[in-house]
Image 1 (cartoon, rainbow, N blue to C red):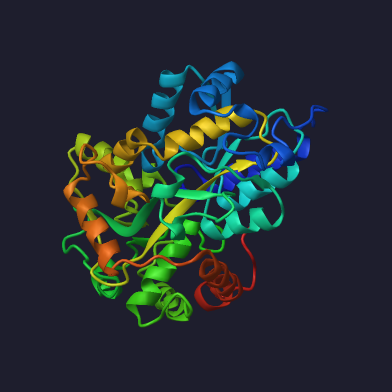
Image 2 (spheres, rainbow, N blue to C red):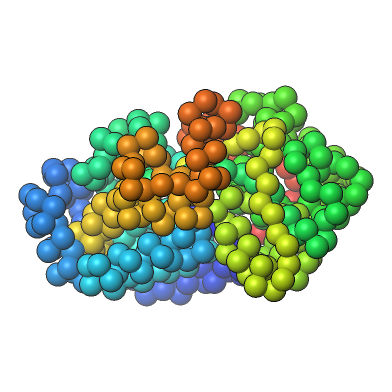
Length: 387
């Protein structure tokens, strides 16, 4: 996943890489294995959901990576899972980017601290599949998830999605921007803030995609989005400050570009401080991105990992996601008891009629390659890559 720099992204990367360099690899072998991954329906964990649940409880532990608590209401989902099943959930490097998670999958295959489940952008998930780093699992709710949101073998599944939005501190911004085109107006000088570097952050990359769509580009032609941000930087509207919750709270980020669900906690915190905050769905360049969840091929708790995947698709998890307007990908099959908010209903209708679009993993990989090659020279005026 690519959180909206809830702490310094570079600090998180440094801590992660430091851990990779100094971690002592354990001699224990994987509990999950390739043969277990191919078994059906519950791998090494029995032949029924009840047996899976019992086996997961016996393991008693689950390790996640890249799952910050404020991200799409993940904290509430983790706590509910832990309480319901009596399983101790550890979340390592919650602010890790998808790329950093991929590094962990490659490097920690025998480490006792290795994660069971990862949360990745679709293009990185596909890369992990190609390297054999994931083990397939199809939950009991697999048939209710549309084909576009899952890898056919079960290597990964996307259980929720978000839309790219503008988070606006109304105490700092007099006229609320409603479109990507609006953000080019002179009154927003120094105010528009990306969630990190799009060469590293999936969230920032999606901002470039949204701008590209608004400027006549497409998922197959993201250059208009790169030129858009080059222009924003040239006219001084692009804010160079690091985007953190604290900077948002204290007014250093008047306009932030992030997923709709990422602003939920900020909205609460700002409201508690008496600050008026608005989350704006742009009228142009509307884009959504689902995130993929997958079980590591070397998961130390394979049964708890499978039970977690079951829970992520459940009605309970869907209710938690919808509370912050993150949309479950099985929205078409949710029961009447699971109701979206008004904003969530609007997103679902927009997804259904095609006004909000979703790039494929293949398109995302091509988009990332274009941004990687052009962002430094066109937007920042440098050939240096992010460190």
